[in-house]
Length: 118
Image (tube, rainbow, N blue to C red):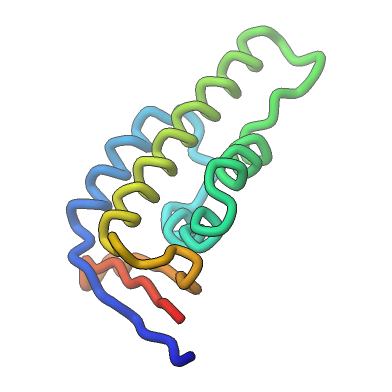
């Protein structure tokens, strides 16, 4: 089956994502990378998101309660931002089998979200 790339207006989605990411205190992730992870969301859903945020903001045994609380807060904020982003992207391809998604990206220059389907 041939691949097909669909372009969507991306300014609104990016603004919402950035507002959500404003709740994360430590920015140890790459915003553009979050868009490319959409294909992982399409295959594994919240399981993928949970694993990712725990890798980015691990709760280290023996760390201070404040450090543990900060890690938990960052996990929650990044998790919510990612899920909100992916749900918004799901709406862009409403009615399409998500398993067909092979790539997604956001172009800052052109303010578009591209989703490639097979």
